[in-house]
Length: 460
Image 1: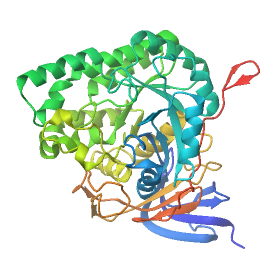
Image 2: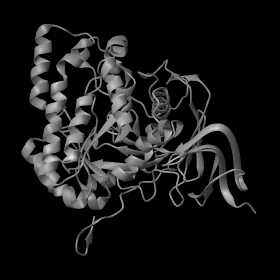
Image 3: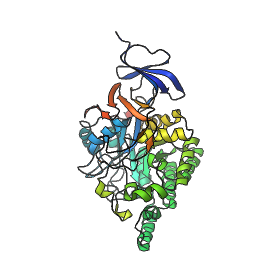
């Protein structure tokens, strides 16, 4: 009888070290043993040579339902499985269903569960007309964090939360220990600059960056972190395109406040003068893609330890929403679930960033951030056996060729990847074999944060 259900041998990336010729052994869906040398027997045993064995990634920012009748969880989680992402955290701004109550949370869980191929957690938010009244009930329903915005894209689906209401929401969240994540663009400043761009007549790729210059992000970040400082709530900026923003967060942490910033893979990969110029609306993202010099500054922030986690901000808009010649008329956001892990590994190795640090930003820190680290985030005994294997095989990314994306376009098409996802495991079961996704809809589970005592006799 085999000792374990699954044994993988290769270069194992642990939280504190890399073990060459190491192995990971799995029993009953959990990591059971980490070792080095001759691997033990297993019902399924793979000797993978130089392949990298990392914890499955947790994508902290996914929009599965932003466009009706478009992507949905059946496709977003398929892309995730193919890309080595074993848990997604889905945003609350669904077209037709703002997730702002316990009933809306339950509705989304019931909707997603039969479709999901990987595990999923959920963000909650508020309806500005209701204020903070439903925050506690959403915590009890199992949301992993809350999301707000200092900029209003749509008054109902993606509303601006003004300063006094943001403060009230932060104050209501603070006792629960969950994090308040905020989209960081100052509404008044963005609208002023947008009007200036429109008046100038500029409509090409330059228009988007000009309409959202750095000051629009930085003003909002001060509002967000000062609100956290005022309420004692962990404050998190869900995407920052500027090195200066990470310095602002570091200053708040130095003063004793919980202030973190997330970096999306597009800010570490694409630049304005080459990629936005070439792709136009297919590289329109809020906040905007910045010049190449800023991209390299962000990589320095990664190396310095000032980036808390890396995500995709994944959204698969239909192509007709991304190809308008008037740059400002395009939808904002890009898909990335299938390619985040190999892109970040590529960039990290090119710049001397260790694989342990890369794994921390894609798995361990997201698990801690959403209070899922009791079951997710690292290759340590007792956690879920969520594993991604990357082999040293060069591929050129093409979103249409894999069949794992609801859209065939990607701003990352044509990028050479020296490491390619060859297998993904969810709780010890293989869910992807190279480009072939093996997981059936319903394989994934809803995961919720570990409860925290907040009042005697109560939990959240």
